[in-house]
Image (cartoon, rainbow, N blue to C red; front, side, top):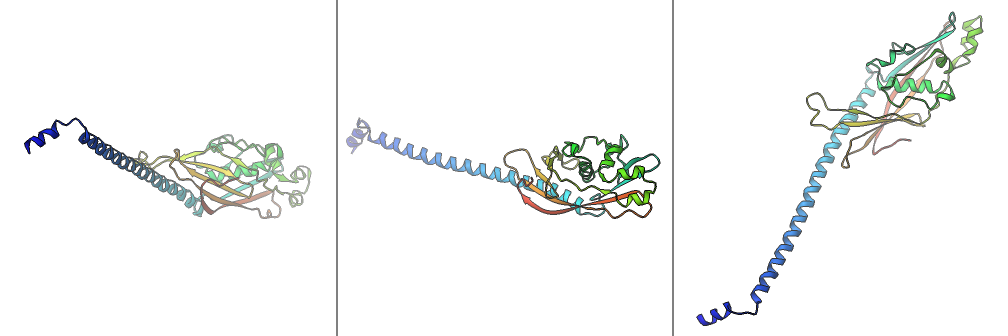
Amino acid sequence: MLSRAKHKVQSQRGASLSMALMLFLVITTVASIVLAAATASAGRIAQAEQLEKSYYTITSAMDLVRSEIKDPSTNRSVKITRTYDPENKSWAMTLGTMDVVASDAMKSPTCTLFQLATLDLVLASASESITDSSPSSFKDLRSVSSDMIKSSMVNADTLGSAADQAAAAANVTPKDIPWTPHTYEHFEISGPSGYSNLFDPVRVTVYRNTDETFSLVFEQDGASTAVFTLVASVGFATPEPSEGTTTWNTTVTWTPMYVVEGSHHD
């Protein structure tokens, strides 16, 4: 027995070594497969976690904006007043309570996105030469002149020479909105104070569409993020001016329509 064991130990055939190497190769292969599967699974979990975080952050920002549009107490209903002064033969315009002809009026921090986009729509009707000249950013200063306001009205020239202003005013009315496509520079919605490090900013890009709607696209930087679009309609109502006056009040109402996943605009 001892002689036989000694013979195996001293054997030079290498069968035991080959079997050990084969077993090592099998174990290494299985370990590689398990490691690759675990790594892929961890990557999917991390990606799913990031996508879920992005989803809730973006939808929260979108719901915040949608609630602002739906809340009657906010500036979703924008009142624009155009007034002709027969003594000075000049026009004035107010956006809510702000005089838009005043050089610093449109720098007011109380001026909302809805008010600025509405003003751009009205000014786009002034003449063909400025139809596509809406400011690229909501932060840009809007410059409005008496002539520009006049150009946004039909038959406005009749007011300057008519002796009976009331009779002439009956033929004057705001021009139709051309609804040319326009894209504004994006702005960001950040997390509340003290929590901004927990939430990545949400980028909002506003598009004016030809179907008389606005698209607000909400997204974040990065590959694993959600994208949603809030579509809102804009309705204009301009009643006939009171007899004997040369003031036209236009009420513009923003109404949220629907939300779609992805970027949806003209």
